[in-house]
Image (cartoon, rainbow, N blue to C red; front, top):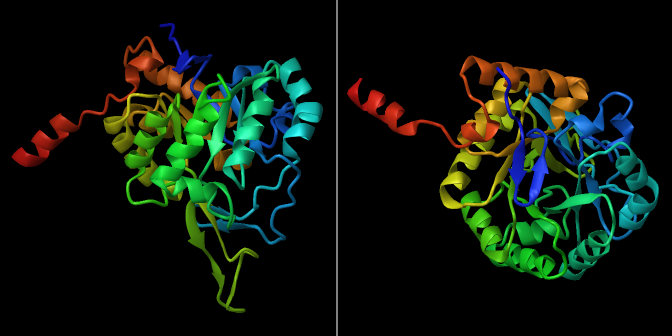
Length: 314
């Protein structure tokens, strides 16, 4: 049976729910010879500050048993070079571009949003207020309910583009931050960013990352991320973009059934750059097998009541 994978994120319509996660797909162009960018739901490009940023010195990536740690430090070319050097080709390849924006101050976030709002080819803004491996800027907003509200509401005043704050899991209740973002005018939220973590070389007794700590991603975090998506779904009405350790169609469907309207794939793309078609084929097969005509009909359909009754009666 034919299935409809069309996904709505506020005013933004995606052809399918798969988005390449920021930080794991470069600026999109790097994968253009491997992946048809126009066939993805969207591409969340590498985070952008106002100016170029070098990031942390190596070593800044460490493999873990079920994922990886990174402390890249948001290295990037800055918003002006992105508009000049990368965005034209993304437009040419018909990519749906979600620009991940970063800032050290509220004013920097607002200025980047203002600049991008006047540029053709930008579909949405993903506000990075959750990177755990830099000591200044976004994470200070993302770990404060007031800060989250203030940065989203300030950007809301200067742009009509869909606003999607990317939330940190390194808080007590991520759902309360989703509510703060919604109250401030966010069109959706994406969650979760990486978990603050650390690895030590026991022979040298030194941290394996030059930054000492970094962000943990990959399959190890998936069950926690799914739980957080589920909790946010109970608290907000705006769409949720779920991410964290997705490696195949079943993983993606787990997020969608928990409450995510769309999903982002990050770390798994390093392992298999051809993952996109495989996940889409798997979702289509699942929907046909279960006679689900539209992907939107699966969102938030987890049946906790029946499960609770079974556990109680057993």
